[in-house]
Length: 143
Image (cartoon, rainbow, N blue to C red):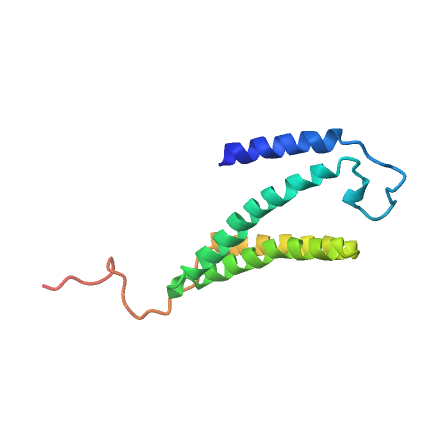
């Protein structure tokens, strides 16, 4: 699937790069896809964005749901932060389509911070366990 996605994104990128731009409607401060004379090039993004959403947010939610042991609470929180961080740019994109483009930049910024914090939680060592059982390696043999 990675090969297919790479080919798809490469093809979409080529069409976006060669698409004619109507500079008369291009604003100085607000980005918009309306400047493309080939409006059909905008149809490439929903497929790849949906694919990315399913695997990033879905994978993080799935991992958080199955981190049930007490020593995995840190990973659960990390995966929740990743899922929320990945959702924020989509929310900002909705605001952008409604005319509030500035919200997109803030949600992207906050989203990447949450993804990074989630990553840091997932790679760090878990805190001490609340279990009172001794690990098998330190138990004294009966004898």
